[in-house]
Length: 244
Ligand code: GEK
Image (cartoon, rainbow, N blue to C red):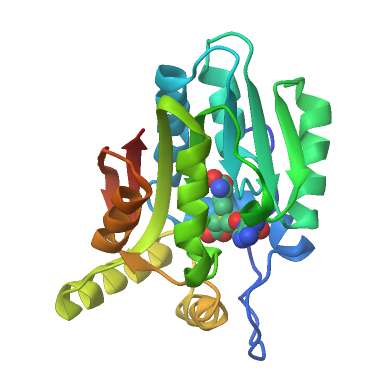
């Protein structure tokens, strides 16, 4: 548990009418609890992003945390990166997330993190040594994903890395069903009821659009990344690293 831990996520406990999931203040206020009980391995992924960022950060370069939410990956990187003269750009288009992140930055004394409320499709990536897309690309319109990854590639220095975590789907329908069911079993184990799980699933239906690992690999190769592979996977959640 971090010093920032907030309230428990009970957003989907009551019967609710259909409506798409949005990253508003009610979500931001319980987000730490929500994401750590909803993504198997989330805390491990966050901590390893810090380890990888320390390995790849270059002096006088920029680190980007795209779709940073409350800044978990940014704080992990700030804690672990030892190279000199770098800045972490923590970017999210949810005003509720960014306002809470600003509060955290004010009280945490981490001047190397700069928060910005913006659409990541419109942010210029410049002089980057590390770019993180931790469960963000899945919320970007599919038609815009190629351009975004290409832009990240162009903005990275040689030797720089992109770390990208996503909910994934499987080409084999039986495996897809199995991993989906195992994932719901995990959520029940984390204290969510069947009704909460079903309602959240409906709310996310048109908002979170997963792709296959092959789809991600192809997009990363097409953008120019030469070395890339999965470094973490649990059921239908995976994280890849791609080196320029
Ligand atoms: C973490 N990375 O804790 N531009 C900017 N932000 C966006 C966009 C966009 N176009 N689309 C979605 N977002 C975080 C977790 S959460 C994952 C990331 C989840 C933002 C959105 O506002 C939200 O804060 C974040 O991407 C996705 O490591 O909730 O499953």
